[in-house]
Length: 570
Image (cartoon, rainbow, N blue to C red):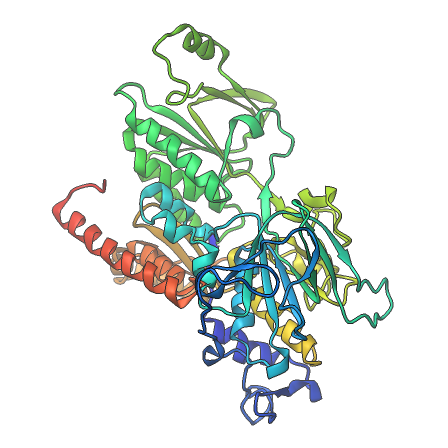
């Protein structure tokens, strides 16, 4: 599931300025040295450091080696080839601030992109190093498109080398973090250190930083339930999605017979989207069941989306099992024994059946047979799993790093955290902030701004989350999008019973206000188009946006031709 967001300029030039304190801190310094103040808070206009004209386009020759001993890839993207010695994250001998970003997901990559687009004083443009254990960025909301053929692997998971090619201030290092040593821990007191610390990677490489950004993302949580980690397929990253795709393709190649059993555990956004995607692709070749621990799907979500999802799942013949707690998952021993005795059995193409054991109300136990179990029941901050690592930062009970209102890690003057790994020191402030891409997008703007402010001795801005809507996929073409627009119950009732009801329904528009009185829901192909358009806008770079947009336009034309001819997609 992905949260709808507005253009980034609304979150920078205007929105960030409006949250600047009403004192002299309201002013900022433009490249020309003139002081400008926020146009919303004061009469004059505010000039944001975020500017597309500030993006650099210079490119180094492919294969050249910089002064760090790193080999520059395409477009001057540096790839580290260190020999274990501590090296700066910027150019050797340079006085430019060195910013290291751990994690190349939405929070980390988009922070780097924002930092590149800022207007920096000439001597203070930082050298940015992005560190991730994978060589690909994953646009997670599009993982479902891998299953239904709506997007290619290159569109969903582009290489960091390609994305960072136009940026000559950002380098990429592939590796896993072993430890972080901070030279700037305040322990409650102000630190005068001008350096940040050192990062040690699992292979022994060490990188020095002046400023550190932690954006490690999340990992799948199995809650210690027996059999889940070994037998269920998670759906959290690109590798997970490709494994699911291979299993779906295996089911498609089976001989005609009894439909394969597919069980999706977890009825939040991820579970509903995955169940609808798999059910649509497999059709009558599979019987899909969606298991929810609660009394309904999408509990606590906008009523318009719940209604749209239920309708689509019903059309796709997905069975919803509610109030079912998974107690364990095991292999079907009888089926496994028969398979071992069969000389024609191929484990690669015919995985053993599983049994999903659930507890129902009244202490009733039930077993659901399955050929494939998909696990979307939960995730936890990656920093929680990384507690065994040597990270000198405080965490809350969920494993998220404790930060102040400015997203700066507590007791660390030069360390920021965002996304799934960030948790405010005041629990009430993060209770209503969902672990979604929209939050990471917004926090990336703030972290980039606050890094710029800290380096240039300007006031930092407290993060203010603005919920801008909810989006979900309900198949290859369909979707559901809820916008938080005020809708009175009287207006909603009048339109539903009036002559416009059938017209709005045909257009895929419904008014379903929630407890706060908000809720305009788009559904069907209209919502699917809006969702795709929002994802296209949110691609990390203009170059990738053009590539994806071109492919999607061609795909849309082919889809329209198929719909007109009445044929099904391949």
